[in-house]
Length: 466
Image (cartoon, rainbow, N blue to C red; front, side):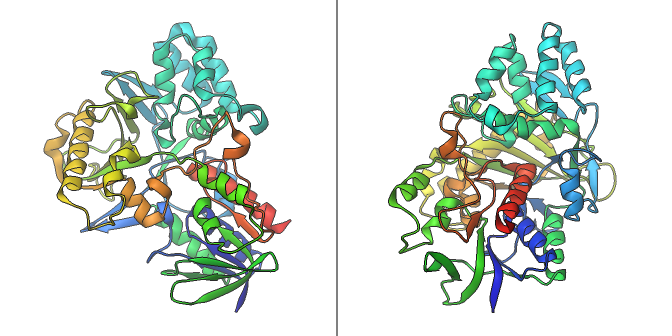
């Protein structure tokens, strides 16, 4: 069978594209190398508990807000979303002082003005920027750190406003204001958790794809895109299976995608070298904790904890974890939490010794390093959750090596290709490629995160349908 559209990779971007095209009546096939679809939205089970990989919270889901219409269109608003505390959906602790980040642009600014009264005017300018996001052409060449530092006189406030950006890679020299602002804005509008795992999003999209007549095939790893007359005609798997299509969309990292084109005149050598030279964002270390029953009351917000006011550079510190995000899973029953996740950036340099190994086949030194990092994360989290260590029943850990093995993301990158305000034309990728019927989607193009990938997927759909 020859499909209208073959989509490679079943992350959020690929599934959105597949659902929408199948709904339009196109014959659609999704190919996924793993045993289950979902990419970074996958959940996994350990014993009686389900854990998320990449999804912890999402912003802008209320009526009229940035993500509501898209999620309504995708059928995702029917899922059991839980709205986080309006009086502090995120709470930032830096050196034992805690600052609540409140829902709503005006309240966000007025609350922080109580802690930083001399910055009241600057805070209004900041939330006005988040409320009326600057166009890409204006903000993509603006350095986020420089913009914040020029707006605010108090370096501590710059750190507080940046502290929850652990959902992106903070780099002082290169992060564009465009990406920083888009990643922060929707959460101030409103912030939400799922009561359940990220697999609920995956299952909803996959069920819709199948209901609209599309196919999703797992354990189908693409190794080659076959070309004829300057166009892709089929995707080939290691077992020899060939899937023919008229249009192809890759939700896999661009460096891997273009590597599937073996002998082609469609991609010039200079283009390949430019793509392969792009740097990737760092990865994330996660300690997923199962807590003893009835030891920690559920908290309906996220906690961000830092040893000192160096939010933009703490991941470079030597001597232990300097910052951690604490995310609490909504309990299935009762008022006590059974699961929390502790997340912190983990540079590839800490993983490089084991880069030629695979999951389940790493040595004791690797396990010891993970244990040290988990201990550091717990110790830091105890600044806001006293005696957390005594509450822990079980701890499961993952590193950028885990991400790389399951998602093929180079160096276990958590947010795809690194965007650079100094060279935006090179680091911001278009869904269109030099091959006329090959398109890209996913977090490596322009924006990452649930909202960014959703926006990017709809941009990919525009290009495919044009």
